[in-house]
Image (tube, rainbow, N blue to C red; front, side, top):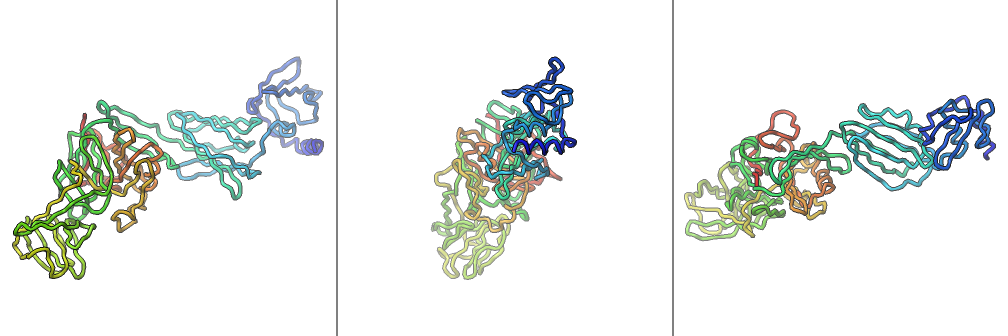
Length: 486
C-alpha cells in the first residue's frame, strides 16, 4: 500500500503544494548543505542532488524552508483524516463547513476572545489556507499531526466561535462572529452601565444597567405619554414600563405606586417589590366594589373574570347575557346590556343581566378598591415571564396574550431581571424574540426575568441619554421603571 501511495505521489508531483515548514509545526535549518525539518518526534532531511535521506523515500523535493504538503501526507505525518472545506455566511457569522470522511463527530464547543482566539479542529483541513476571511480578521492556519490549528486575530473586536457537528451527512461547522467590544461604565457606587453579549446560542447584544443597590420606582401618569427620560429626569436610569392602550394611553396591567393601586391586573406576570427585594409572579390581588349603601362585593378584574367583574381597560367590555354599569368619578353614568364601550378614565362593572350585586341606578355611588396580598409597596405588570428561579419560563399561553404575533416578531425587547445574588438588571436587547432573550439571559446568569413592553417602546435611558440603538424617534410611553442612586 505504501508503494502504491508513493507511485500516486510521483504521478502528481507537478501539482504539489509547497508551504512554509512552520505551517506544519516544523522548524527549518540548513546543516552541512542539507535541509533539515524538525518537530516533536519528527526529523526530515533532504540533501540537494541526492533526495530525501531521512526518511529514505522518493518524494517531491522541498524548496528551501517550504515543504510539499503531499510529501508529508505520504509519509504519514498527519494522524487525523482529511476533511473538505466550504465557506459561507449564517446570519452575522462567517461559517466554515468541514465535510467529514467519518461519522465520529465529537462534542460541541464555544468560546470568546478579546481580539485573539485559538481554535483546534481535529481534522486535516488544508482548504482553510484559501479561506476568504472577513474584513478585519486575520488568521494563521497550521496543519499539525493532530489536526488544524487556527490562530485568529481581530484587534478592537470580540471574537466568538461556536463549533458543532451535524450528522447527515457528517459535517463539522465552525461559526465565527466579529463583535463590537463590550462596555462598562460606573454610574454610582454599586451601579454601572454595561453593554454585553448573551449567547442563545447566537450572540445577542444587551444594553443594561446593573445595580447592587439603589431605589427603584414606577413612574408615569395614566392617559399621559412621555419619553421615559422625561418621566424621571433626575434618575440614574429609566427603562420603559408595562403595556398601555395605544389609542388612549390607558395603562394595561397592575401598577402599584407607594401602596396605591394606579391600574388593575390584566392576568399577566408582574414584578413586585419593597425596598430592594424583588419578586415575580401572577399578582394575588383582591378587588372589592362598594355599593351606594356601603354594601361590598368581591369582584374579578379585567381578564380574570368572575360573576361580577370590574373592567378598567378602554374598549368593549362584557359578554352577551351580561349587563354593564359604566362608572365615572365614582358615579354610575349608565346601565345597559353588554357589550358596552368603556371610555378612558372610566371603569365598568359587569354582572348577569338583571342580577346586579345590589340595587343599582344611574347616579348611584359605586367605588372600586384593590390591594395586593401580600401588600407590596410597588408593582408593575409586564409579561411574558422569561426566567423563573434559574429556569427557562417563556410560555405566553399561560398569560393573557391573545395575539401571539408581537411575541414572534424580531424587535428590541425590554426586560427587568436579577441574579441569584440580588443584582438588578434593567435592560434592552438588540432586535430578537422574547424566547431567544430568555435563553440569552439564562446563559448570562439571570435568576428571574420579566419582559416589559417591547418593539418601539423598548428604551433604556442613562443619565438622560438613550443607550440602546434606535431607528427613528423614540416612542413616548405611559409608565417606566426609574432607578435612583443609593
